[in-house]
Image 1 (cartoon, rainbow, N blue to C red):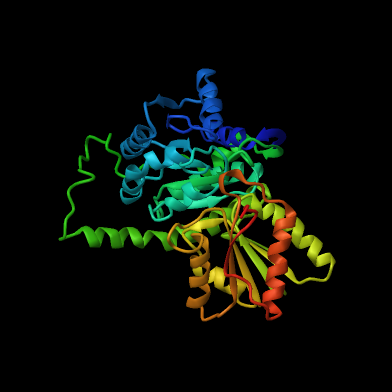
Image 2 (tube, helix red, strand yellow):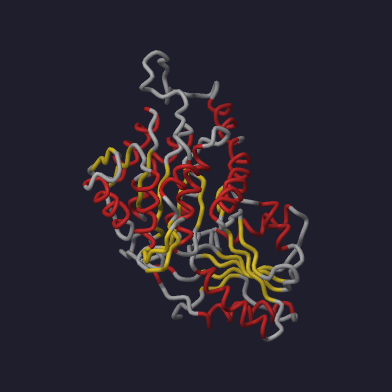
Length: 392
């Protein structure tokens, strides 16, 4: 039997890491993810894990050490935020192209400038095309549960990809909640023993990784990597179901709230989805057919599933906790729009950029979004892209 513990999001992630007991953690702490590796370092010092904790001089070095340790045959983890992720940029692509299942907890934070240590999704969105699986959690429980599932997803032999366990900086990372923590043995049974593929430390089977790859074979290798993502999407579904069977909390690509007969719906990532749920409940009590699509798996992007979930709506709003500068929208909006169009569904859509740099998102603002959707359905003209809660 597990137990219920009061934990911050960062501590919940560190607790899951302790239970998984990775071979290597290479870290260069950065706010607001510092507490993940700080807590885990105490586990190492107290002898609660057998992990080789590598203190490095930068995030670039941290991810380099992680990829090298994974290539050597180890189960590897790390945590970072914002500019720390940006400094890992070069190595993010190397991790995915080498198919090394490094598990990185990304505590989402605004990127400079100006300097800001609070939450938005500009770091994760910036890395969306780096080839990593990205799973977003709504609260501390999901931060804990997702880290365990991320390990199982990335390490599957039909996937072998690095995975980001994303949670909102401060809003989740530094908020206490009662978290159901499972038994150590049960968590270890779920993730299973690590099975390295062609580890470099196997000196009886020497080979080269990361060679020069020019016009003759680069595209073929990239096509090979491309074909891993449908399997990764299926792995998210299957590992989420297996997690539910084992621990009673089932997960999928997304969570649908009152979507069966929804006429107006919001698409949201992360902690904002929790606030949206309360607003949807209030609107339903008033007879408004409102719904919510909480997107959990951002990469691989579940195109067909999103189109299927939203096709019956009369209007949809996308909540973007990041801006695509020069793109004219947030980064999530065009992907949801493309999913609907690819499915053959022409649903009117609005985009709301909100919460940058930790700006609060009260329920009243989400209510404004649903009001706008209702007006759009009623024939009124509403600006397609709006900044929510910004002083003009």
